[in-house]
Amino acid sequence: MGQSVGNLGQSVGNLSQQARERLGQVHSDDITELPEEYISLENRVDGLKNAHASLLKIAKAYDNEAYDYPTQVQESMTLLSTQVSHSVTSWAASAAKGTNLPPIQATSAPENVHRTLPHALSRAAASGAIQLGASPTNIAGLSTPAGVQPESAQPGKLAEALQKFALAQDRLGNARLSQDEQIRQGFLKPWTSFGSQLAAATKARQSVNSARLHLDSWKATLKASEAAGKTEKVEHQRNEVEKAEDSLVAATEEAISAMKSVTENDEPVKSLAALIKAQADYHKAAGDLLGQLSGEMAQLALSAEGEYRASRS
Image 1: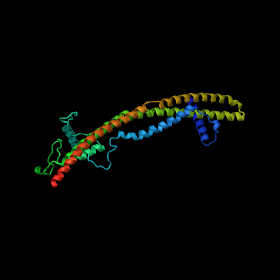
Image 2: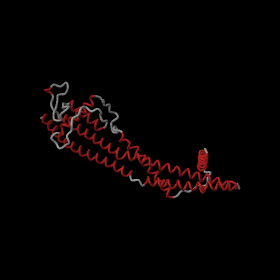
Image 3: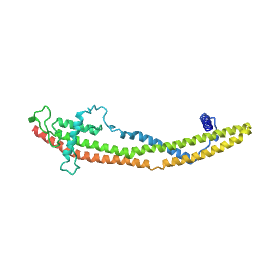
Image 4: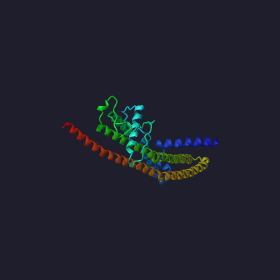
């Protein structure tokens, strides 16, 4: 009970001292100055907290698979979408045959349909390719679209182009998902964890502020007693001032240690490097993939142009 009363009294004294300072009722000379090292570290930690919070707020997008998914798209995540996704998987397995690419097993229709922009583009292109006659299971073959007589169904360059585009976009979407997972593990987790160290440093700083207010409150009380000639209280108040000074020194040393630990920690730099590496790996893979697709599409375009001119001659 005695300790609780003492803590309550200290809190009231601190609030009173803080209010007087904010109202300009305390001369600057009567406010205890903190060490220059402490002030410098406070400024650095404040900057670090702002940078940490700002980047984390944006980078949390990587926790949401659909961060680039077009909101205006009203895709039906039903059997049609899963069947189209299954066709893309089957095409990928067909395309990998006879190549140095790792074998891809055509699976049953996937339970989950990825909501990313590349996957949405892939599904749209695949659906169009199938409607134009592309086989749902074989990248090399064309089937007869529903409602079209077999003799009138002719292979088309657009169906082939859409098929290639669907495959490339599916791979691009998978690469993006891989990037996101690397960023979650290598950046978001350690970056979020670092926030607890910032919180510990902030708590240590609050202890310093509380100890400083407590000291200045006792200093003001002692000064008033000395001015009023209340000698019977002066000795006790001087003892309280000395104890408050010791508490402030201890709290300041602890806060300096906590803030140094935060500002000198190498984890933020390492996690930021992991973010950049994940992005670099993804963009390299995307560049290679789209570069190859661009060449194939250019050849298809020339071939389609040649066929069109021949049909008009």
